[in-house]
Structure formats: structure tokens, C-alpha cells
Length: 186
Image (tube, rainbow, N blue to C red; front, side, top):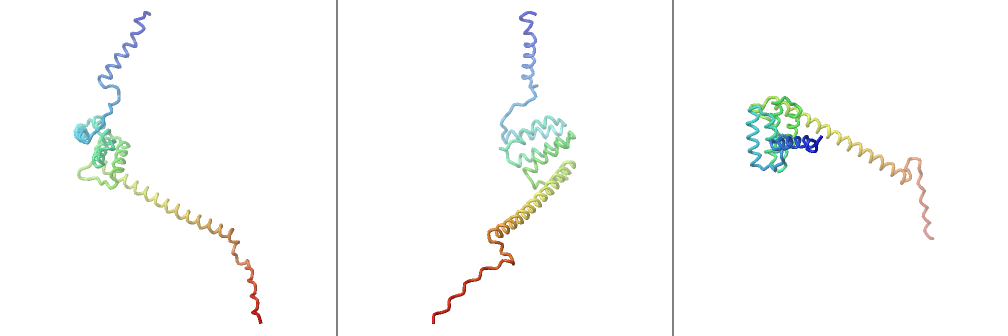
């Protein structure tokens, strides 16, 4: 093997890697700061991609904006709504549910519009809200139970301390009688 032959494979790999990077085949997308204006454009493009059944394109446009905390909650909720539609279009119920959960994190009182929204989306939102209500009720019951048990424990502890420090105060204890006063001088 000659010196130039031993470097042929690395040069070939370098050339393939360079072409892949140049064409954007690297798998990742460059990180860019999203502004409200660029996210509005991304939303519009994602909506068009959704209607064209280009779901991967729609996801790529929506996800960075939906996760941008600098955007208003209303814009992010709109992104998560469309993102859930896209996932439902792909028949990915789990991803759609996560998008709905994110939407409800931003807007807990969100109510879908059955006349405009997909029926499966309306169903997921209803189910997620019911589960959240049940979870909140369960958490409330747990808090109440902890409060009652804590109060009972505090009462028992204070009673035990009073018994130990106060000498018991039980029915069998006789108090020392007070000395009789001296009779008045005559």
C-alpha cells in the first residue's frame, strides 16, 4: 500500500461528510433565535404544510416556536394546537397527547371548538382535562388527609408532653393540701 493509497478512504469520507453538511443531511437543524414575526411566518408555512400532508415539514416549523418561552402564551398555544393536529395526521396519538398537554399547561381553561377542530383532537383535549381534574381532586384529597393526620399527630404529641411535664393530672392524684392559716392572735 502506498502513502497516497492509505489516505484515499479518509479523503472519500471527508468528501461525503462535506457534501452531507452542505446539503443539510446532518440530521440537525441550525439553532436560530425565533422572533414573533418569524414564528408567525413559520406558523403560516406549517399550516400550509399540514394541509398538504407534509407533516415532517410542519413539525420542523412548529416545534422550535412552540418551545420558545419568549413568545406569548397565546401564540405558543396556537402552535401546540396545530402541532397536535399534525401528529394526529400521522396517527401518532402519544405525540398528539403531549402537544395537547403542553397546550393545557399554557392555557388550562382551553376549550376546543367542535365545529372547527378535528374530532380526535376534541376528544384528546376532553380526556386530558378530565384526567387533570381527577388528578387535582386526588391531590386535594391527599392534602386534606395530610392536614388531618398532621393535626391528629400534633394533638397526640401535645397531650403526651402535657402528661409527662404536668405530672399526669389523673383522677388518682391528690393535691397537697394547703397549710391551715394560723388563728388570729387573741
